[in-house]
Length: 386
Image 1 (cartoon, rainbow, N blue to C red):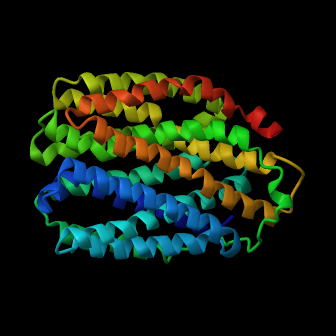
Image 2 (image 1 turned 45 degrees about the horizontal axis):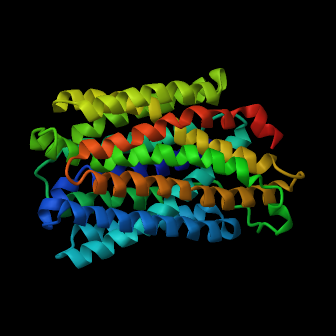
């Protein structure tokens, strides 16, 4: 395998993370710029999540026929357009249109980057999903640092500058598509029940992750009363810890196994959430998000890896091209767990925490505890058995 496709996939994850976090860490600024209420922000996030789910379904239909690279490029170009429209919008209706385009493109890119990553993982036959997701986190760190470094820069300027990134990345080299369409017979061996169990862990991760990256800056601003230029510090330590955990995740997964890694991470994540909820001030809140990121980060990449392995191990042996095409279709469907978690994390956290986001951050604690019994579903021997 040449280096170029891997570099392109890495860049795709990076661009997605950079744009997403640059948007969510600027929510207080968007709130002030367009005169939005917290309920208004919640409704906008709901729209983005629902449309992202639609974008992922679109990827499911197109990728097996045309290849995930086509979907990824189209999604990246659409994100560039969405940034230009939303960032330069003269009023709220135009802002909503721009963010609607972003929502669909978000789903397309989420699904297709994971399709590309699992295809590469099967080719190299070792764990690589955590480090690819680490590239997303690295992009998120850069997006957060931009918010911290340019607190007084206009929304239009930042959005227009960021629009260049996904367009440039869209021109990179990716893994070619199979061009094979799965037949009804080829789908018979997919073991959906264990995939759904693994998907539950994915929902838990994105509930916690989206609550942290979407509402963290608002929590620091409204509840912990951090200085206005430092509200993004809710997200930055979370991302830095997540990045470190994911970069180490490839090696740790192969050495200790996914179940043990997930259980240990769950203990750390619960501790971090408790600190976040009980934080008396913003410096303690920074510590809480740092611990949380270290504990929860590897759940998502290991979930996608497990789902892809289950997809290919179930049923009779398939032609490699057909196997890859149906894996693309299943990963796009599995990506819906991302948005189920995002719906809980972004919308319900904001709705439940309307009076105080402390209550909103208390909800994920119960969910993270469920990772303990779910971790057994990630056992490689059980996955191989299909």
